[in-house]
Amino acid sequence: MTSLSLRSLTKRYDTATIVNAVSLDVEQGQLVSLLGPSGCGKTTILRMIAGLLDPTGGQILFGDEDVTELPANRRNVGLVFQSYALFPHMTVFENVAFGLRRQGVKGQELKTRVGEALEQVRLGALAERFPRQLSGGQQQRVALARSVAPRPAILLFDEPLSNLDAQLREEMQIEIKRLQSELKLTSLFVTHDQHEAMSLSDRICLMSGGNIQQFATPEEVYFSPANGFVSGFVGSPNKLTGVLRDGAVELAPGLLLPSSRAASTGGGRVRVTLRQEDLVLAPQGPGLPGTITMRIFEGASVQYIVTLDKGPEVMVRVSSRGAQADLEKDTAVAVSVPADRVFVSAEESAA
Amino acid sequence: MTRSCSAGVGLIGPASVLILAGFLAPTVIMAMLSLRDYSGMHGIGTDWTLSNYIDVLGDWFYMEIVLRTLALGLVVTVLCLVVGFPLALFILRVGPRMQTVAILLVIFPLLCNIVVRSFGWMVLLSPRGVINDALLNIGLISEPLDLMYNLTGVIIGLVQIYLPFMVLLLVPALQNIPADVEAAALTLRSSRARVFFTITVPLASPGIITGSILVFVLSISALVTPRMLGGPTYRVMATQIYDEFMTNLNWPSGAALAFVLTFIALALIWAANRVAAHLTRGISA
Image 1 (tube, chains in turn cyan, green):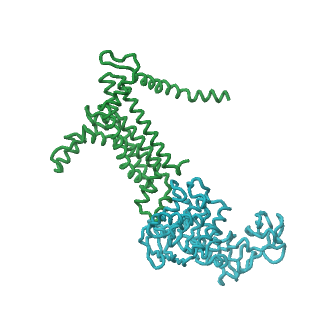
Image 2 (cartoon, helix red, strand yellow):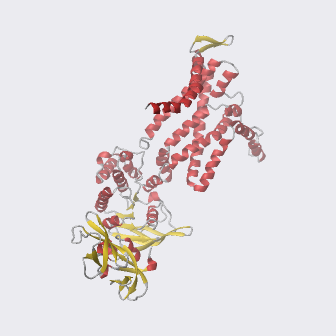
Image 3 (cartoon, rainbow over the protein chains, first blue to last red):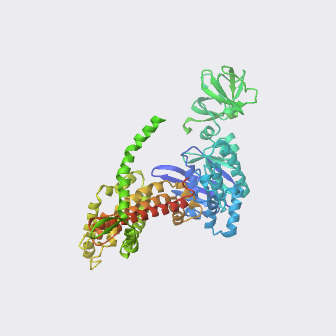
């Protein structure tokens, strides 16, 4: 058990910079997510930590130990792959025993340790099966057991849930969270799925273009996005443009949206991000006038597409048990947004 | 039903006729021939006998040829594997453009007739050939090495000729190994060498086994290269069968020898498949 620190970690291929001087600290026992769109450098960081890729510059520290030059097989990390990467020619038992044998564990102790690891992922009964005889979810649980069995200093996850269907993904999330907090393993979790990152992480490191955009708790990332990229990435926000005028954004001539987050100076074109769930619908009253053009029932929520008068379309999501759940198509509505939920950013920061 | 049935007969008909007339019938004739008696005075007789097989299996002269052929096949197969494996890995890792070039270079020798290639090796390997001349000139040796008209020459020739088959079967087998699986083994504290022997080789075993069977069977039945590089007195099964038929005119004996060769090959393929089925339990369905 140890902490993980990255110091100006950089990876360049020819002229392309994939990871740009990233510094990051993961405290002992914490789970941190590297979240970002594909190509943001998150998997590259993970592979450098595992020792599967050589960094161009910077340092990787496990606790106080600099492991930057250490080969992968001497780093004491556990890595869970998106593809599971089980050894197909070995039984589940042998897969889990693989890392333990390299540590010199054998005989009865090996059996006990493998048994423990398989019990932790509730697969004790399947030890003699081959990986191809298991379902995707079971295979990923074997992979999880295999990587924690040798008691690694750092546990790394490379989009481990992306190949699973939605329901299984949720189950596995809980499984991972439970195991990680039971074993108090310092973990880094790479994902492009914000819900996964939100629900699993102690802290989220949001990345784009090889740079850290925000490193904070899930609540902070959601409620106080550091910049336009973060507010545009988290949630499924409406992305609009407007002109800044006296603490408000003009989306279209006459359509003014007050924002407490707008910089005082006005006049420039800005990007505006509005979370679907932050928008409030009312039959009439203050707010931007518009008309419902589509209603989509999603179970727990209802999504409306509202065309603002002389303005853009916005998507609004409300609770399906709320007062505004049954508005019909072509109903005239007023859309309002709390001033502190109107995120404004300079247009060029659009990623 | 009837229409699709007659269409089916029409589709497999030509191939069936070809196999029946071109393969099955000659094999049956050969099998019968191998059971006929033979004497130098009267040629092929009309009596049925097992003496041709008993002669082959009981005579040390023939057994030596059989064992030599098997040893030759084994050495050629192992060498093809040892040379072909790194080559296949290189082809996989060299990058897309060089990969095409490399595969073309591997296939290229197949475009050249075996007789011509064997002549090429004679030019290189003969006592006053290119290799011996070069070694003599730089003073590494004082006497020409015996590179030809012995086992060495035959092995060199056969390895070069059958190497492409091995490589072409190893490349797809290695390609099927996900990179993540090897990476996983690395992070589980295994050195590169250990990953190679515990992960890469077992997972490539389907290709290793098919490649080895192919090279082995081709090697033990090769005629031209052993004859040319081994010389007229170097006997393997294929050259002996040829001699029995063409020189001794003892067709029954040649046929019996041919069937012994065939059964050895079939037995080995069967055994290799059993081993393969066990090794690849987890890999293939």
